[in-house]
Length: 387
Image (cartoon, rainbow, N blue to C red; front, side):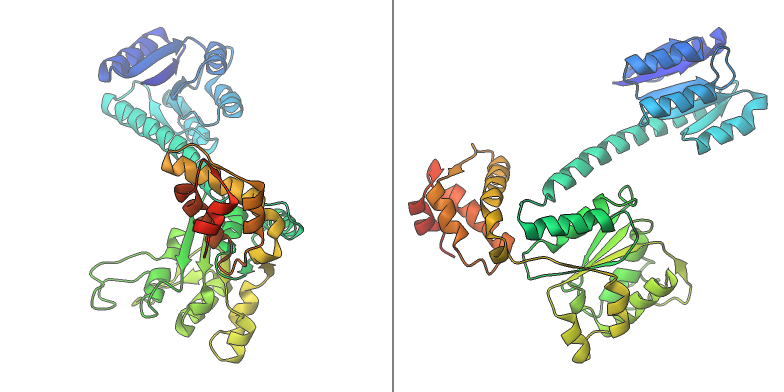
């Protein structure tokens, strides 16, 4: 059910709007207010999915209602109702955050189409917020070690800027978590976060994947296709395992960083992009430069800020917290009661040599939850926790 508020001081137009909306869809609950002040009071008291608001009204005009409502409930879409002389004001309200405007007398088709589009946008905003919470939940940084606190402090300082970041560390240490948190805490967090695993894409396809291609650029290019840089416009692109990128692709990435321009494979046309680049690697890029596998100029462009993620063996004090976090999460995923780990079991796991880092720890915890007893014991670790 969608709840709609109509704020209109002309009773005839208000009745028409209420009638049209009520008859159009029986899932619309339509309420009305005869002036801006009463409309704003309703917005304060109730949750509306959409507001239709006249611009010229006594006591409080539509612009003032929009301004006040944006502070109270910024997620509510507003459709402004404009008289003949209010067109400029109506356009200005869209700059202030209104979804759209309709003119008096309202055209039936335009009114209903605009209402449906506004409600769809509201649903999308809610879905995005839910998804964002899920994403944040999936990318928590668990631990209280000094090494992790140092990284968290760096993220707090770096995230609000547009500085490029190079994240280094062994496989399984959580480099992607750092990248996600930089984006989450940045000014770009409402825009896309696009991940590219450079090691998983064949070298002959990496340029097309990053920059797109035009129809006919190669045999399988049957239509134009945008690349990851375009998809990440105004947001963040995360180039994971950048040490595995081909030299020709590195040259194009360097140009994108220098000029904020890319060109699709098979095209000479430049496309402007505004993208923050975060890169990660488990390789020693300085050694790769010496071996001729990585461009030094690209390294210096990427490594404005360097963040080294420590191995799990270097932050063993975080292992009890990680076990507890994974136990809760895995039990929730399997739909089972959360299992606890005995002190001896935790102590044994703390003393393991975690060559696979956090990723390996998670796998072991999952195995112990599935195969162990109600409480995971030292014996369970001996039986099922072997690596």
